[in-house]
Length: 151
Image (cartoon, rainbow, N blue to C red; front, side, top):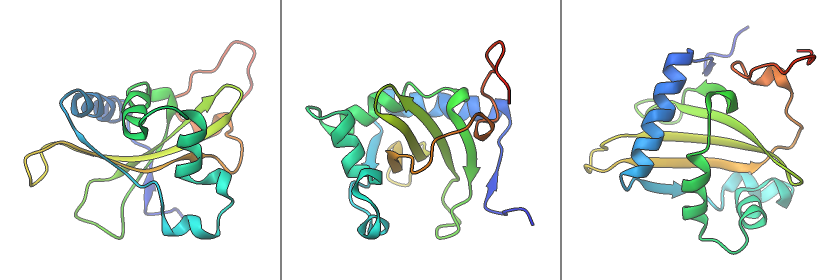
């Protein structure tokens, strides 16, 4: 049975989403970052948002570091689109994955909203943490295969 919460967005949709993300970030979007989450209480510390951001960007303001890193996402980092069942009136979230050389794979889950009810752009970063399991190529529907690489 298919998961009704997730889907793969079209290339056009994902590229439009990334364009909106960059637009929002370049126009003073408010970044909401969940450094501490209830789900992290029983999780290995390494796989928490707070640990990952501190480990990757130790001497930086976390929000500024995240703003910079989110702007580097490409369609090849896209994994899937997720419907938020807890807040069905909110926009869908997108999941991305990015490898940080020497550190590990990072799972990223975000929501971008242009012109919220308060007249501002908003980027909600739900997840930015080391992946508990290594990423595989088939998790990324738009990742280009390198010559000689198998799926």
